[in-house]
Image (tube, rainbow, N blue to C red; front, side, top):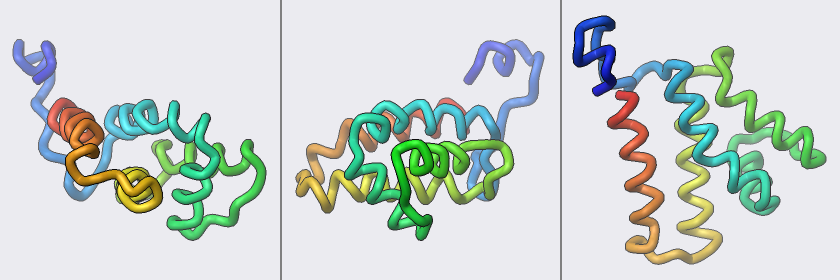
Length: 114
């Protein structure tokens, strides 16, 4: 819970299951951005899974970044995050236990932002 929520300055957030506010979109983008910048295979995997036409680095990066803006549909960032995790699970053949840091980080974001 944020300081402003604890002191009653703002109303506590509800769990975001059918919406996603800009703060959560930004947190998710900040989480995956470092990986998609340096990992072309990951970037292309997510773009392909989302059914977006691939192109150069700039256009792929921009397409993904647009999913995390206030104009995107609420479920699009969740789909991108799902494919982000799926890439490491399927393409890298990472055992489920080794994904625990990714799952933990994502869950912490969700808890912090509700």
